[in-house]
Image: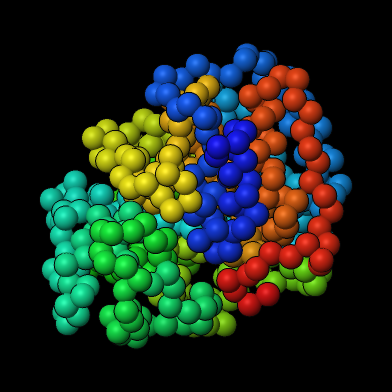
Length: 403
């Protein structure tokens, strides 16, 4: 981020494994001298932008990109196109309606559910863990919801494999017996575990399963009917099958993995793994822009610069979002998610009503640079975007799931 715009974001996505590397990408963008006043990018017509995006993505598809790209420009959805295969083995192509695993982007829904309970007067972000769970060890009993939301609780990053089933009781036992990585409130340490605890709090306060509360209070009011773990009717859409470019073998879908495991594990629930489409995530962006689901003052808290991140002293973490500032386009609210097979990214320019959303089911180092290229097309009328390189087994990314 000391360098050119988006350079650190690109590094972070390349480094992404489920969710810690994805976190780095969440602090995307930025100029050397941040300002709160948005100057916006040089004007290009919609036709010019679409033509440039089409040219880039046609070339990327020829080099192996598989996924969907959505772009909003100045409050208007101008691009939502699919490339490659949803299922390479069966030669089923992706469409704008294809459903993908969006990884750690799940966290912004968990935090929104917590804030909805706060709006309803059922909890406070200052409430400690001991208010919701019995037998919390002394070193963890005063950890607050705010600290869980901002990754400053000091709790371990993860508990185990995402697709090995773990009950809530066993999850809590594991979490409570582990030593803290830091004193609560002392350091920003990205922790999936904290968001699973938040999902448990949602269940205990609301008296409903996490996904039921999420759908009734967040997803449905925002119009997100194709987003969730097991609730949506996936028979109406194609669910992307992950493809492992490292060994050129199919990985399967998350739904298949959950069926094998016997359900969605608490290793994953609340912190990652929700399925969605680019259009649903765009609806979520618009719902936040218009305060459709949460009150304006709640959204301000939701997207506030709560803590400086470990990635860069000029980058902040809000509640399930990374926050940065661009001298050209103002405040940027973003997050990514991935497990080494699937990768998704949501970048929202809230001051100028611009957004870039992409999802892919065949992550590779080449695809990780795509967001930078898409943004630079809008930012620079004469910019010549770089085409992704064909993935090879030699260019490896680490997986947080069995590859």
